[in-house]
Image (tube, rainbow, N blue to C red; front, side):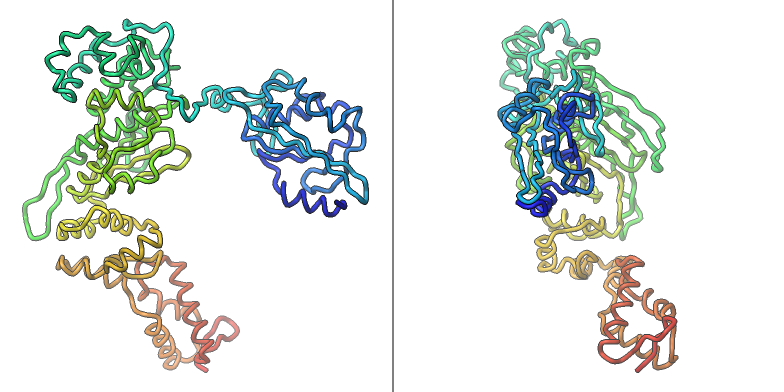
Length: 553
């Protein structure tokens, strides 16, 4: 390749300098391979390997990618550079590490590209007896959080909760928790109710699948361990309850440690599950319900415990926004494809992050045996006419929001008057009411069923579903959302200009925007008027004059 061709090749294949790619000039390799701490090649190899792996390109200028070439090799060759780097670095996967050489055909400049593999399982890569990483383009010593993430990696087939903890005995378990576990085990397994009382603790824990041949697992310690034994779990297995005002001001908090089997009850007592009253149409007597179904609180909390990624060393959080909603948060991605899939299929999940813990929790009646817990939560919200639960999976977390009140009276009326709506239809209508985006398939389904009108993303409930309610307020909202078609507004503009003559754009905006659909934002309404004027201009009916004036042609 010529120098220009190589430049184009590098720019195409390694265009950005980031955590996976680094450009360095390194005209001379003297003291550059293993010399200046944090500035030499082995430091960059360590940093890139300790992230996700990537590439180091030397012989080119930073930022510009102009090729300068390696001019002083100081005895290093393409054949031996890999092994000489490996001799100065620890834990590098040498078999996956390679170096590629490019020599320009016209200027004879040499560029080396180091292809650096990601660190091996639980093995950070060291250079100068330190671990390195990249943060925002800078090479720095590895943070504790990143080092812990590598050292506590969990393989896809490894169950963190099944691991036996050396040195821990049954004396490290809480007797009150064990007694409660026996009671719950009988509820879930009535066929053993006559036998449980005759089992000693070790036999019971084995049969409940909390221990393995009498040895204490992390699961046993999570659910039944004494609080003073929490250090065996790095003191990270905790639930934090936090009470906040609606403007996000902290009002109270408490942190609960192991045994989580008992802590769940303590967290439940903290949540202020007050009565909520609302009037149905046509009656003077209010309905009264608790804001949250007890099952909903317990199932959401137990799901967070069951699916927490404990290797992250993070707490489970329960945030109560007073008299409004609850938010449950745990670390770890949601393993099923989607919440809708779990709810609508109503089948047990096929993959669990912590299968040993999940099995134990099922035996202690903490979570549903055959799945369906999330579906029950959806149905409890539906029965209250409250918004359906919201699930968010950003930042490798699961965040569940349960609203304890009617969010939109119109949506509640629809649920009250249309009892035959299917759950999948209610899920989609809930998205519409919350102004959430729906995909093309969902849009077509609702449109075909005549449940919605308008164009994406500005859709609203259709009169087809509203007309059975006979509610003037909701019907008025429907009319405000629906608006008129484009030809009506263009006729209004033409008529206005014909009557009043040359007119400023602001006056046209004031005429049209109040009459546009209520689901449109102010910016979209203004853009809509622009489109009307542009269309009328193309039709030869109006023209724009200097000073943002418009007139009839």
